[in-house]
Length: 439
Image (cartoon, rainbow, N blue to C red):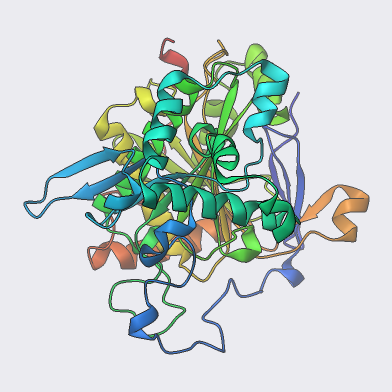
């Protein structure tokens, strides 16, 4: 029998146990009044001449990242299209709204797949690398990226010079063939920013822009599974701001192919074997009966998360489809609209982790597509490490109330998509459709 996920003691202490992971979390009233975050005290005016050069992801520094796999562009007539394998000499011909690039410092480098799985780079990828480096701009770009990575790893100028450029370019193939991608948004700052803390985050995009961001990421997710047959799971996540693990305060998501499911998926598989409807009964139905539903629309629902180390919002697709790329465009838009809205309500000054969860292709147990947004507003310390009891400073009901209040304001000014909020939601049981869907 599962423990009650949420118990409030007479003094106001809230004790939580995640129904999915068993994580134990306490919210103690005396520690629950810390501010989420706000503008830095040392904000500086924006130098207009440097507005596109804040970091290596910015528009004027495209040659500081590895060669693109694809970019999303919009033409003057409003038509959107995806351009693949843009040559170095044409990077400035269009303005990418989104770019898909390899991560320069992969979690699993290509040699991992070669050595452990016998991976051989396909001929079409070799041809792409050779075509890119056949022109001077592409050759210089790849060599500069390789040299920068080697220097970051401790190589000296002399060691670099011992190998000729053609030999280095053979290593450059790895920049085109890896399985850790980054989806980078165009803006570092919001359009028209006057101070350097006016960051462009997920919530500052329009709902339409955010939908394209999510859809572009889903296509990259599907591509990685197709390209790497030994990938059992592709992790998708977004780290926002340095306290949440971001290298740059520039909006981007990451996708990492791995050759295991990971402990969380394995726990979920075991849980679902006993109760295929566990996500419905233990999470979303529980939220509906405890007034923790934040928002819903025709194909998705957002609830305040229970049993997370950090304050969390969980978003579930209510579709029968399970993997993101199986969803219709309307279903993707529904998930995107809720995700965009809770980012907007959170604000750009709060460090967050956005974690995507989906059923791996080799798993038969039904799993919904869900996304968890965590507010990184506290630091795990010795108490948590020694007791495995996590102190979360904001209770789920408070998360719900804070977010619903802000969403009402955002809806009133037309900043978010159409949705029902808080007590407007149906609170119906059995809202998730994943267990009814087929593979």
